[in-house]
Length: 259
Image 1 (spheres, one colour):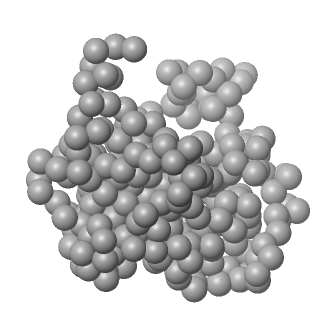
Image 2 (cartoon, one colour):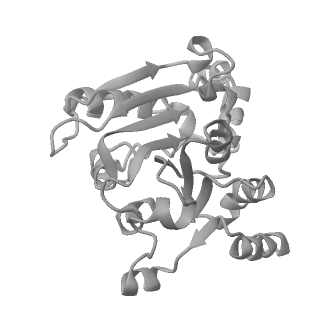
Image 3 (cartoon, helix red, strand yellow):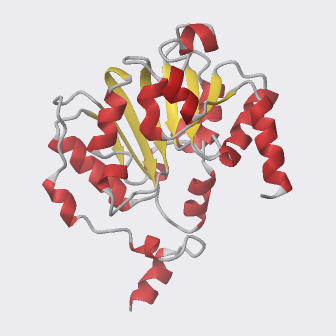
């Protein structure tokens, strides 16, 4: 392990905005802040918003700056990724931002029913072949429901045409209320809106390569048992992701490759 990564891990341990709770300890005694994030960590009763797979925490920190009337928690399993956002938030003295290092599948171990009001999912792996790992799949939505307020809002921001179309079909199939849907936010939203003003590390990469950014916001207000949309089997997969992550084609280059 490189010295730089070791330094970041040490700084994360010393950062009061970062919570790292070993799985063994979690299984043995549970998480002490579960159901008490507002009172015991943030010291208020403001709504709690999560950013799942937060990476460098651009949305967690960016939204925290814009909305002091809400509390924001960035969640990722990779500590080296969390370091950037956690360090920025600590240096700025932010009191409505935190970071939690854990697997998304363990959310119910860290949050009580009704404790979370909103979830952001920013540029996740679309998991085109593994629906159970898809962050907008019905299995994961069931986990979110277990911690969210009734009719809580889920917001997806993605470069993936596949994931956007899948999520749109999933919401329609289950009768979930869609608040917003855009296949190209930079054509439909104006500067000044957090949706275009806050950009993640990966988002800028996709934009630099000429890809459009999609957005879908929906409420978890449908039936108790969600089901997968049958039409999802016919969604065209993201061709550009079949290449290595380091070589992502511009649309024109992709067409040339397939000729």
